[in-house]
Image 1 (cartoon, rainbow, N blue to C red):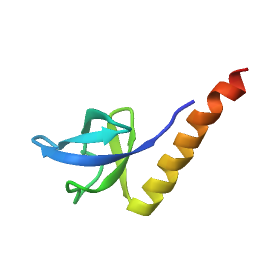
Image 2: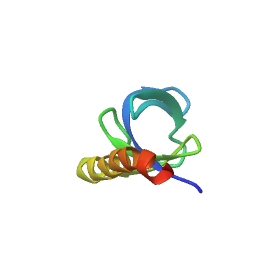
Image 3: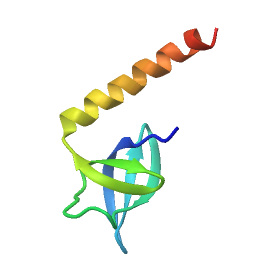
Length: 78
């Protein structure tokens, strides 16, 4: 299964890269596939590439769903 996750851009780096916060984890991702990204934007990240910029409210809803799935996981495995 492949997942694309919303991540908060925290810093722009040289060569079309950026640092992002992905659920509390800082990662460096490529911005080669998107344009006009700035710190504070949310991007959808898949395998190290930002695929698109998304609305902050949409990012919050998606992150909340992932949080709820994480809480349900122990029950699903029982």
